[in-house]
Image (cartoon, rainbow, N blue to C red; front, top):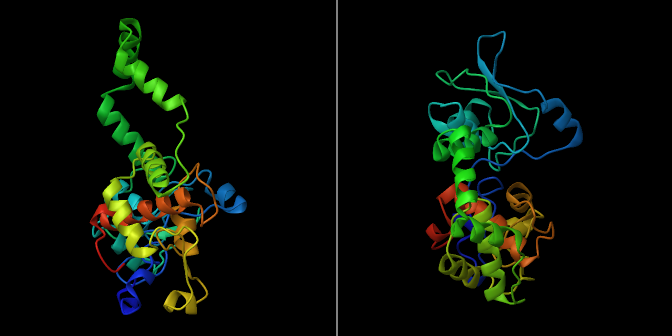
Length: 267
């Protein structure tokens, strides 16, 4: 939660708005939110050089400032992009939006979103090349690799979880693993108990966020703008849904603090 709200009752602290949402130091780059018109505009967007000579980048669906900064080697990181474009918390960006990049940023054309480019690069680095990856896959298939078989079974089968805090956390961890979001059971449990005492319907109606019309809600006390910006695909859009609330909060913590495990006090 924003540090200025730290005086409220301990259990009332919320995962707050910070990055990608509202809040003091708890702020980072929001994921680009997608509208139909904006999506159409962004279809062919790539980094470009404006007539003024300034390097620019057209935001793609799924982009967030941190990914753009890493993908284009921006000096000063996402904070420099935010400063160059006069963006303030919650640092919301939209598909089709043209961002001015700081001097020294890469001008190399990269199709698709910066986030997608990062994922592709990471995949390539792990597999070496598409040819070697296919060869390895074929070899494993012929050998009847038990590891491959187990992985396929795990990915295609739908596990069931009990409808309680333990089940919600374990389900969230499975979703997070699929989406590359770090975090542990203990890290989530510790923060849930501090924020809501395990009540998925908890809502804070008295702090600064509530006064602004965006009260903190759910197990990890997320406000609506944060939930929207960091919602994890495949989960409910109901902010009170335990798994959706946990995964969105952990996704936010990942982008701001590296992991929900690194959150140990006032947000």
